[in-house]
Amino acid sequence: SPSQGYYTRRGGVGESGDFITSPEISQVFGELIGIWYISEWMAMGKPNSFQLVELGPGRGTLTDDILRVFKQLSSVLSKCDVSVHLVEVSPKLSEIQAVMLTGGKVQPNLEDKSAYMKGISKTGIPICWYRDIQDVPPGYSFYLAHEFFDALPIHKFQRTEKGWREVLVDIDPEVPDQLRFVLSPSRTPATQNFIQPEETRDHVEVCPEAGVIVQRLACRIEKDGGAALVADYGHDGTKTDTFRGFRNHKLHDVLSAPGTADLTADVDFSYLRKMAQGRTATLGPIKQREFLKNMGIDLRLQMLLQNSGDTATREQLLHSYDMLMNPEKMGDCFNFFALLPHHRLVHPDKKDKAESKSPLPPVAGFNELLLK
Ligand code: SAH
Image (cartoon, rainbow, N blue to C red; front, side, top):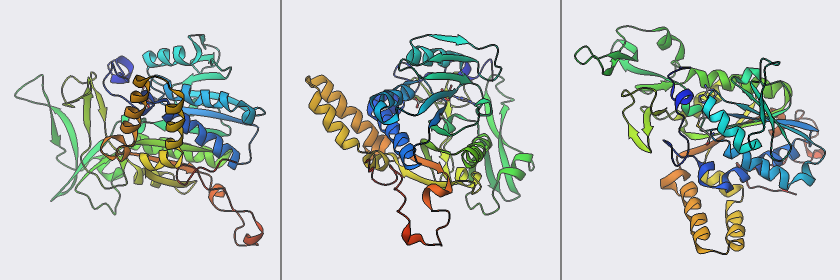
């Protein structure tokens, strides 16, 4: 809802908000993702420009950490024209992002209807803000969606003796201020359109908006090149009831005080893969701890520990490493998933003279990082 929705009204990412995310826990998370983009840019032949497009940037911390890596590796990127494009619906969060990334030096953009705000990052890179991925100009792009797809609305379905029924929200007739879940008395348009014929589960959650966005990303990557990295908690088409709410870092009844709590559902990566419709190759989902290990998190931690003099900083570094990597914390339930052009994984004319071709470099994160 543009007036009463959680992200347009509250959107509390961070320690003082409703939920905490990996970039808010440790700078290393964003740094390794920045390295992922540079490694893919190199593997794809160092094109002379690219757009970094982030969906749902939260407080802007992840992009800030990535841009710091781009700055540190500016000798590598020196001949490349980089721009940043943020897709954000929340007015409050876009202001926080503007302060984080530009120091507040932004202008509302009235001439160009697609981007609603423009600025220059602290490191000198142009940044534009949009409400919809379709407004982002076409071009070679690296996309990022971290804890974005889980925030989009879902449909819930239940298999019954009479076939699939949709779980709907109704007002409790006994208590007028209270909402309750009910089953649709018959099939609904959503039960007819969103359940896969081969579905074996009895309870299913589907996020059609995520499907549409992945289709758009896949079309854009197929046409203009680039890659997308999606990181979120989720499963590969196995889980059933994951819809839940968070307020002040505690579980919150999804039906009580709508618009005041973060509502979330696990991302179904098997659905995202299906919605790429073969336009791009897909990699993953791979567990966060495996992805970050492949990206060299252990080495980075050792370097930061060596360079930090005081015990409090060292303890903080070890604590945040544990949060990201421990299988019982974020290490196992968060996953990484990528969309890449087919030619990034297989030589287009593989069958002819494959032996004369140099092998394609492995995709970092999903394999060990090899930066030459
Ligand atoms: N990526 C950030 C924040 C995740 S919270 C991090 O990891 O810290 C989800 C983000 O998606 C918020 O910035 C929220 O405002 C944004 N968002 C939610 N729904 C959206 C939509 N439909 N379109 C664009 N952005 C949306």
